[in-house]
Image (cartoon, rainbow, N blue to C red; front, side):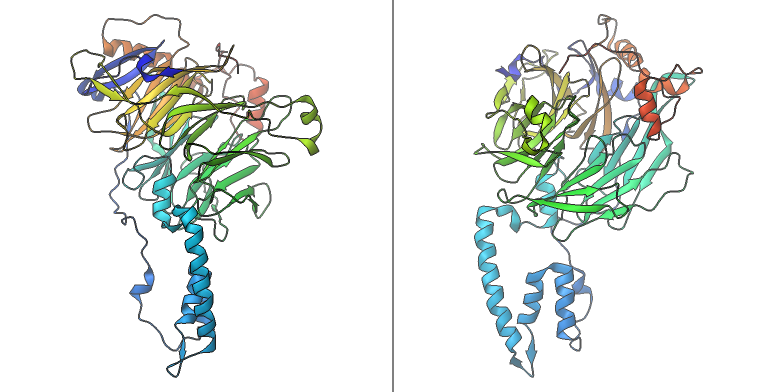
Length: 564
């Protein structure tokens, strides 16, 4: 089992990570990084104030009205706040100064309900939290309540980046190249802003596969589904607001591999919601399993070859998680864990699940399989997961010497806050919780599956002084490796090329020249859009073109990747 002491030395304080090249890390000073950033990092500055972590009620803004019918008042209380609020309204009702019989019955029912709620909450303490406290506890960002960027997601097939801000705004950026620069950059002129009255306190984002423009936004009131415009001047269709009684706040959303189904999760609801986006009214179906106290995290795998089946992880606020096969929606459960699952992601082929748990500084993985008999008979289909998860990396904090051997030792490691796996399956990124010693670093791991599954520490990514990583994600289909995107606590979004498929050796001339060459190696991210003559379409391009992508998007040359 590997440990962080096997990784390359972390950057010293005052240094910024620029890129990785064949497991060798290039760093420079903060001044040099700011002066020569080819990607034009995005700085998200939020000026709109946010309320503190407790719920505000608008009832205090209005004077009470005594002449409103008690039935209407009870109905309004139930509609706005639920059954307990309606019973509370009836319990306070009096007729000519005397307690009425509906009030007496409501007091008895309210007492019984509160006793049951207290007993239930003793098993699941998170049910006593407010909506904002649940979002802060179960979202992927380390400091969700204060960080300017609360979620971030690359489109799986296009060079689009969606960023959710603290002020309830979603911005969509388009990466592009120009004739004067071979390196891709972001154009603020092509940035789109998405805002909706129901889009409050955003927790997660998810792009629909095989669609160029559909984006799901998980928030406190449910899910808002957007149809992002192809260009800023195009008309924008009205977004859909998906909600269900008791299913809020939503802390995680995930699309099926074919883009037909959308899943949403809420820690306050024991039901997993599956939305059929192909139906005109976007029908939602609750799938309920008792035990766990809710659903806090989702991770939907890619389709498994030869079967078309995919798997869906549903983690709960308690030490229990389930994995579903998504044809018949049967599940298997794993319990008696060290803590709740805080982060998880699937391998590109959908057969390996890597996850981390609260209060346990380690990474684990589960392998899955589908037998021939199960794949042939859907009525007996099972998930096919291993009985026991295997601990693959020990993340116990360790003290390491800084890379420049000049600074004081750096402590790395801790419990994991979030995970991201690149599309090739060769790089895994992890951030640490706010109380971990290594909270100001992003840990990078190399991953292989042949002959056995192996996760090895590779190195660390550091931002500017005082910054901690909040959200990490990878851009898909990068020819020379992977492009890691990090949203830092300052509101800055940085892009770190991880170049593990380039045959060239590391140039030792200077860190700036080395980075320019490294960034030139990933210029294929955007140069395809400027190609004067498009090559013949491949089968993959034709499939993407049918789902709304331009025919001028050429297939990138094949890259040797580790098979999964």
